Amino acid sequence: MRVLVGDIRIYIEKKGVGEPLVLVHGNGEDHQIFDFLVERLSKHYTCYLIDSRNHGKSDQTDVFDYHVMAHDVICLMAKLNIKEPYFLGFSDGGIIGLIIAIQHKQAFKKMVVCGANLYPSGLKKSILKDMEEAYQKTKSPYLQMMLQEPHLIPKDLKNIDIPTLIVAGEHDVIRRSHTTMIANHIQQASLVILENKNHDDYIVHRDDLYDRLCEFFI
Image (cartoon, rainbow, N blue to C red):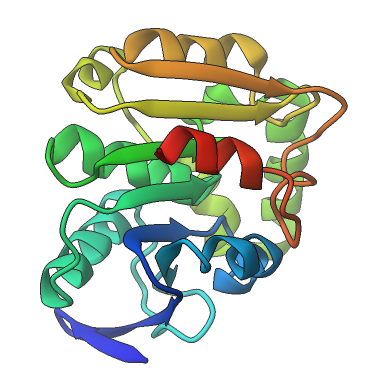
């Protein structure tokens, strides 16, 4: 269904039964990346799969901004009366989750953040170079957002006071030291580095995280 949030409509699918779980995808993707994972999770959780603005079936806008996208999620949760859900965010979705958890301490019950960064230089230099070259050719607003945002401050992560699982692949596009720094700045965070995995091959159309999520959400 498409829900009016401010002056745009955000698409959200609801699947399953049980405690609420909100899932947010990465840059240039949509909620369908979680298909295999949600097929299993929906047997135990009510999964709310969101298409961020400018993605999937949500409205296209001129605004590409992580803080605005985070505000969309908060407003959507309020409108649908989704209270203290579990949260899973991948890449851009993880950034959105961090922003929400910093600004709204009681928004989530527990949070899983996969492959996220606090600022562009959290990405490996080679990845940033490739993105910059691609942007010069395409002028893609999706690439521009990743090159210019986010601008989160590590000390602000101290405001997050919920159990948090920080996940990244061994060969992620995010620098290992950056991922470790994020986990170290969150009071109740645990860090998982998945061996032989890159940025997305453990989560996009995969259910690799299923057992870890079920254990963490208990």
